[in-house]
Length: 194
Image 1 (tube, one colour):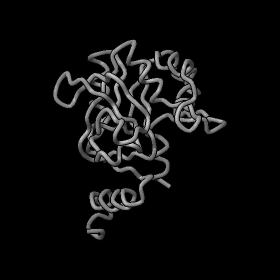
Image 2 (image 1 turned 90 degrees about the vertical axis):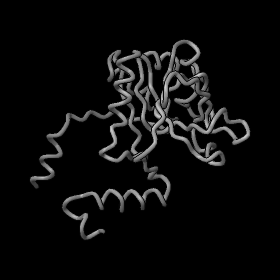
Image 3 (image 1 turned 120 degrees about the vertical axis):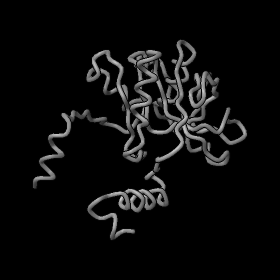
C-alpha cells in the first residue's frame, strides 16, 4: 500500500482519450487543448528507455538550445527500417542532425537512411497546424511522421541519435530482454534474477 501511494504522489497525471484509433498524429492532435500552446513531450509506451539513460533530458536540452522540435532516432538494420519513420539527416554535430525529411515506413530501398524515429518526441505547438493540414497517410491514419515532415520544410526539426538502453516492447524478444535486464538492475530482485 505504501508503494502504491508513493507512485500516486510522484507526478500529477492527466489523460485525454483518443476515441477512435486514427493514428499517432490524431492522438497528438487530441491533446492540443491540454498543452495550451506550449512545447510538450510525447513518450510512447511501447518504447521503454532504461532508467539510467537520460534520453528525454538530452532532448529537452536540445529543445531549450534551439527552440525547435526534437525527435529521438536510432540506427537500425536496413531491412528493419520499414517498421519505422526514416529520416534524411543533415548532421550539425555528432549525434544531432537537422531533419531534411522523414518518411513513414519506407521500403528498405526507398529509405533515406537507416536512422529510425522511436517513441520519444519533444514538439513545438506548430506541430498542430501541420497535423490539421495532413492528409491520411500509411494505413489511412493521421501520421505524426507526415506532419513532422511538413514542419521540417518550414522550420528546423532536430533528430537526436540515441544509442543505448531502448527496448521495443511491441517486439516479443525485446519485451523479454527488458524484463530480464531491468530486473537484474533492481535492488530488491536483481540478485535472485542474476
